[in-house]
Length: 313
Image (cartoon, rainbow, N blue to C red; front, top):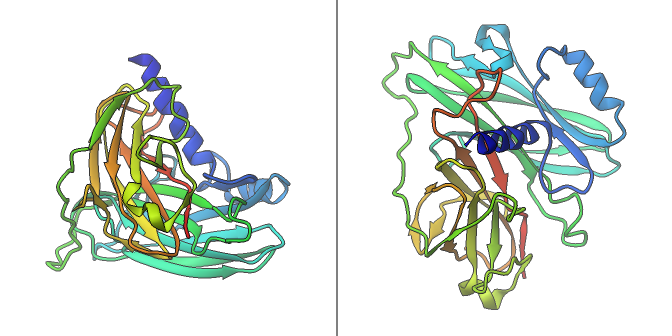
């Protein structure tokens, strides 16, 4: 059991210090614990291996404990912050920044930005009127278009970030609420070893082979694989990003956005993309049992895994 706790902690640390699916290094971290913002910024700017990075900054009135990524709303249940994306490459970046509250497959804020070479762009984050209680907010940064000429380059960029928001005194009746969809049973469940699966979420054909390009004629032969490499039961939510928009996801021809996976197993579902051309990505959050804690931290343990961006021909 302790081995699997260490595995979860290692995966968690990898998440908050790096991005997914890039040939070169990208980083999406708030202010590293006990480092001042300027120290962090200088570190990112002066590291030639870091080609993109993001910064999250909230005013003091919203802060509870930055080391634990805990924040609070104002008396109206609103939360405001700034999120800055820096592009250190020589290319124009077309970026989608979306914000979710855990439990919903639809972003409460979505913004597309153009970031010129060697510049930064800042997005104002405004999360309005949340219902009383504790919420986990996710900020997902990714390309809003995939470069078909360089389809396996760093254009397949995906970077997650999350934090906790506490709402304790919102008396507004028109609060934002979320309804959970029903859990869909997988077509197949396979036992795995922790070292067996490199990817945690991916598309395969009916024989189980990982695929990269999605041909028009095999749309009915696609299967979503979700892997739980830990020793704990994992609950989580799925998010479906297709041609720059978030859509409702259907597994086994039924709408859903959540799942539960037993330890060291892989769930396999049938999936059919909603388009004949373009690209899509599916990413998921992993929520461990309450007994799982990050050592020496009050942070709520979460993991976010993404599939590659799949091209549809």
